Length: 192
Image 1 (spheres, rainbow, N blue to C red):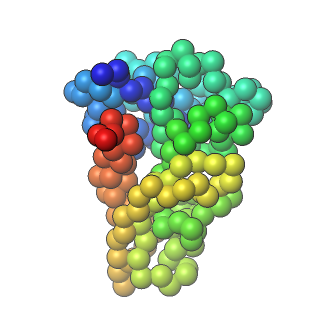
Image 2 (spheres, rainbow, N blue to C red):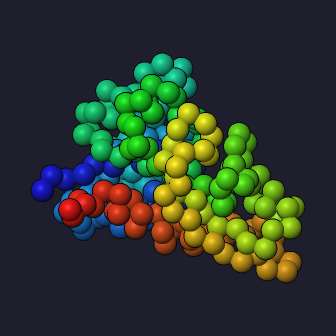
């Protein structure tokens, strides 16, 4: 059985990237083969270096033009995993990896998605809405922000007096618990 290779795209600290790397560290069938970032000072760079995973720092113009597809192919990428990556994925990359790019969103799509709906913006919108629950959505990536087919959702209650910080902590727990498992399920060979 051949190894499945993951490329993790991240723009920030990389806590989800670390959980994914840890999850697959001792597995024979899945390997994190590349970490990609658009932020030369992202914390995820330290994670890639510490874990001895090849790192690619990308720039916007080339990403839009060719999606760095050659570099992804050099690392035998089977699945592109967005883990807090803040750039929109260009159509050329979506076409090269149809149904093989996934994203995690810190709210229950289709609500609270779209342009500029990331980080604290999402959690503020959820709290301002008066909704009684929030959660995470893992979905395939298409040409629109936070739009592709939903793969998995997990929910958490919004308590009286919930703050952005307390909601972020709840969402991180859900992300760290579920994202590696969902990735594994996507890559696991399907039995007929």
